[in-house]
Amino acid sequence: MLLTTPILAGPREDLLAQYATAAKAAASAFSGFSAARGKTLHTQAFVGGKPDTPACTSCHGQDPRSAGRSLAGKVIDPVAVSVSPSRYADPAKVEKWFKRNCNEVLGRECATQEKGDWLTYMFSQ
Amino acid sequence: MTIPYRPLVLGFAAIAFSLVLLQRAQAGGSHFFAPVADPVVREECGSCHMPFAASMLPADSWQRMMGNLKDHFGDDASVDAETARRITGYLVANAADTGGRRYSDKLLRGVAMNNAPLRITELPKWVREHRKVADWEWKHKDVRTRANCAACHRDAERGYYDE
Image (cartoon, rainbow over all chains, first blue to last red):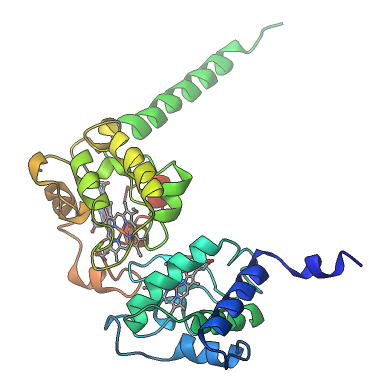
């Protein structure tokens, strides 16, 4: 009995739960994250950031299950959890890259809701 | 019964000789630059591009670069103070004019040490080595930028730059 919940909760799920708490605190209308919104965020082209990186897909590629490529030519492992199961286990790393990449693409930091949506999409992939 | 010692001795000699060659290639040659050994530096400085060998730039350059990671060639590469200290320590200790001197060889020739260049790809020696590389090669979609050493030097991540 005691074991049922902990089996599901890894550092990845803990992080998403933290984002959910923060998103709820920021907007009481918050009703959960959405993989569909996450997908839109991932593929949409923005104008606020750097011209050579309009979208997350500029580096991570169209298909989250395939490898991406940085501007300097370095291969980036897929961002979908199904093919990169070791991802998102280190909250500090996740936060660091959200900060860098959102600034690069959107020209601002991502909101907690956006981070949660994006992660939910990647967890589902 | 005669023991075939001759081939044996010759065999050992051959092995010893190739060991000498290997050592020369690794320690003295201008084509080997010891890859970054520190896992933190590999992680933090090797995610956007391959981790460049510390012995490719002088200590002053690393110090200058680490002083402004917020604007790192237009990217935000900043890390927390503790991590920055560790990375700086490693790069400075193994730089072209400190611990990495035996690798850097001629790479720093013609570099004014007091102006701390930030780009390996702008060192006079690097430019000279690559002057025969054609324009279309630099623009090739698998290359994109001069900093993408591994696109042309397949063993760059292991420190080898022969072509």
